[in-house]
Length: 71
Image (tube, rainbow, N blue to C red; front, top):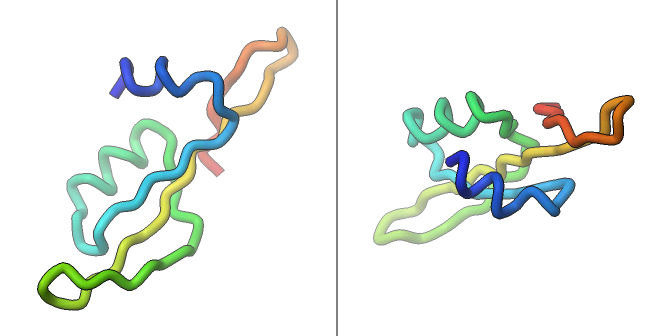
């Protein structure tokens, strides 16, 4: 995940989608600073499912460096 975040470091906001019920992935993404924004997308994957949108926000600190903001 560190390599992926480095590749995406130019972006202030990153979105990803996780299937509802995939608790292992949800915990992983939350640990690196993603948070569920309330957006749910119904999907049909053989059976009805839902994808949850998780966002990662960055902001500048007083030195002009980026820090993640998990909110």
